[in-house]
Length: 232
Image 1: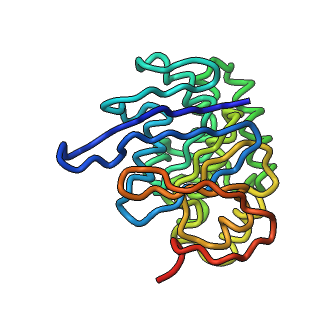
Image 2: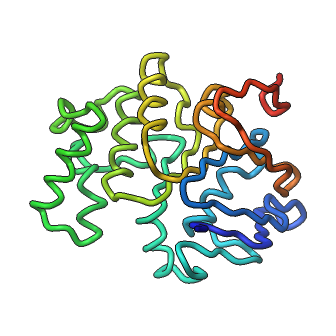
C-alpha cells in the first residue's frame, strides 16, 4: 500500500537552479526510507512538499489515497504524516508541554478530556510524564526534541517524516530517541547525516543530488556497507 507518491515534482527558489527537478518518490506502508544528500540538496524541501508546506512548481503529490492540491487537502495529510522539524523550537509554541502535545488532537476534533488522556498516554509511553506541566521554552534541547516527537505521535499518524532527528543531541538522549523510533510501527522518511540512524532504522536508501533522486537500494538490518554520503 502506497502512503505517499510524488510524480515529476519540480521546485525552485531560484528559477535558474531547481532544487527538485522531476523527482519521483514512493513511501509504502511499513517502509523506512533514508533520504540522503549533501547539505542544501533539497531534502527538507522535499519533506515539506510531501505535507504541503511548499507547493511544487510542477508535478503531483498523491497522499493517502488521492491527489493533493489545495491547502484543505493537505490539512488531512499533515494529520496522517507527522513532520518532525529539524529545530524543535520551530515545532513547539505553547506555554507548557501538555498544551503542546494536546494541540494536535484538539485540532483533530478531540474533546479536552480525550486530548488530556492522549497527552498522559503519549508522555508516559516516551518516559516524559514528569515533563507534562513544565514550561516548554525552559526545557533542554534534548527534552524539546522528545516533546516534539510526542506532539507528532499524539496525532496518531500513519507516517513520520523525520528531519535530522538526532541533530545536536547528547549521546544519552540520542540513544533514547533511536530506541523509541526503532520501536514505532509507522512508515518513515528519514533525513539524517548520522550513519547509525540510517543503519538502525532504514529499510532502503535514496540520495537527492542535482535535484534528482539517485539510486534505490535495500538497507538490511545490521548492514555496514560504506555509503559515499557519509564520507568526509
